[in-house]
Length: 304
Image 1: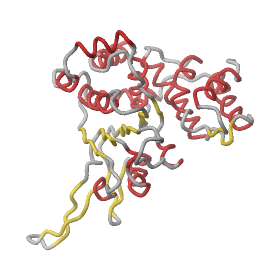
Image 2 (image 1 turned 135 degrees about the vertical axis):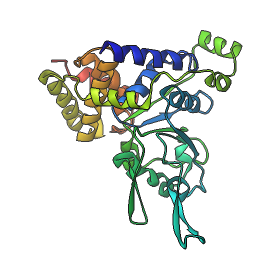
Image 3 (image 1 turned 30 degrees about the horizontal axis):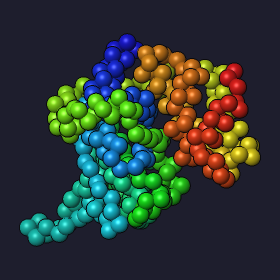
Image 4 (image 1 turned 180 degrees about the vertical axis):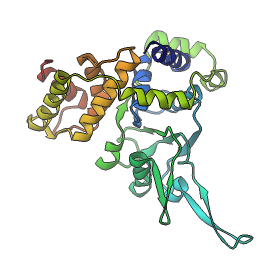
């Protein structure tokens, strides 16, 4: 546990040199990766969404591909395509950018729903089926998607099935005054990424992912988690409650966050820290914003 915490603290420290003043968001993104999930970063342009993905790949030593989603992007541009080889007299598959350990789906909501759906099988089953043949994706496999607010021109809302594939949604937000001043006076972030060292190997990351499932979740914590799920389904504040998949995501992320803190067991605070990122894009309500709804959910369910 101590060695894992030291490794992860080093990773967080390296990333925090580039992404200033956003340690909680960095921790949540790494928690999501440790729990074998994918993360959606929704925010206005220019706050560091793409930079965070680049530095994550750099520090974690993962093979990296960036896909710029546009309205004319096709599924084959993501998955790959078979091209006829005259010399061999047969079709040869040319893998698309999805075949990387970390894939940045930049501005994912600027592509059409058909193109967005090309990611569904990859994100859920870590494989791609092309022309009847199933091809496994490299491990670990992690999708970081960025999304602009829906009120901006040229965006397509992600369907519920696509949103549900993202274990967590986070927002970076504008920096605080002193943080922004340090950013303005500092070096270019993209240049600084080149100076960052790899802090962990992909094999170590896989071992950490395996260790997450061994973090103990006591029965009272399961009772607490079930009470949260049941309240979301029964409360008049929500039109659609949380699914069993959401419950598993909360449990897995809570285990990952506990491991990041150097503990071998989950406490209620772990659940409460990861909860907003997991349920904010899954709860469906009439009027109130998701932050208010998540806070209502936390306050309504007592800790056992």
